[in-house]
Image (cartoon, rainbow, N blue to C red; front, side, top):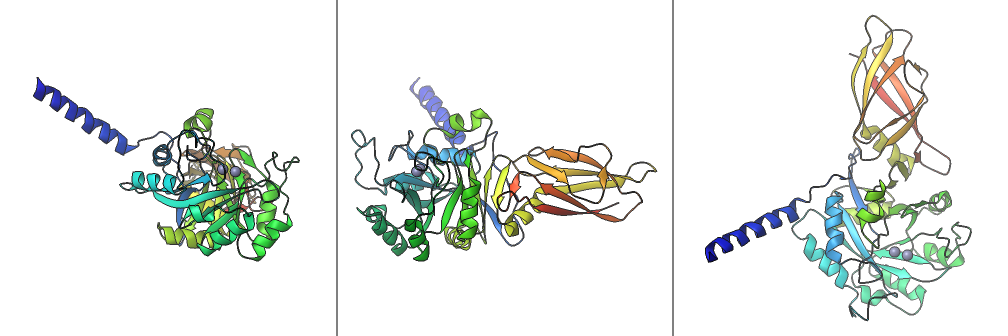
Length: 370
Ligand SMILES: [Zn+2]
Ligand SMILES: [Zn+2]
């Protein structure tokens, strides 16, 4: 009986171990690489019980694996620890260390980060790629920023449009931020935080050459706050030369990002255009019967639904000029080319994508006809 129990126990522990390490999921986020770069799926803003989050750091690692992310950072508030009576933790590096250990056997990179948490005009700012979170905790916000810079951190302004700090829901670039930018202590800005997108933050990013960021800022569970509501968590796609921490850091400082939340993609045209080009696969282009109507299949290989408007010289035979290709789906278009051609340029405006406020990119897909 003992051996039977022992083997049953062994069996159970093996299966539960296997389950733990498959991390199969119905919701993996997916985006293609672009020429010259790997598209790293990152979420560099989240919380655990080590600040005001509701879960242990290991849960953040498991969630990230289920979402097929490449990189995360646990950015606990340095100055705000509402659970410290129950979970005393004087060392502000602990959350990172626990996540790092949990991610050890997985292909998930953990970036050491912290949230510098002040009221307006300083607001909240994430310092990632820090060496020691304890040293970033200072009385004066200015000193926290200069210490972060000393540690080589990449620093971005969190939820700058947050209405709790700016009642109009618009970011206000104060002398504090201007000074940080001038000193090379502020490098990025969230244009997407949780479910919120601010065009005004995008304008600030472009005017001040700040890296465009999107993050979940998750405190509860990704499942409850995003997935069960039919949403994907917001992420930043970072275009890095390889999947490594130094390469990620180089790409963030260079501003090679696109922020993504569901069907909203925000980034500089030089990265958004190649991403959109790589995201649609074109197949089976041929003329219908003896007609001059071209049939072509467009497949969206990303986990975001993509909305397009026809911007070509040609009109469509059987589709609205505005159409969606759902994540992973194929749309058959019938294009009236008037006479038979060997190749055409299909120009589509990506309506859910923004390279600047009110500016959507037009992508040219070259179609070679069989
Ligand atoms: Zn915050
Ligand atoms: Zn936060």
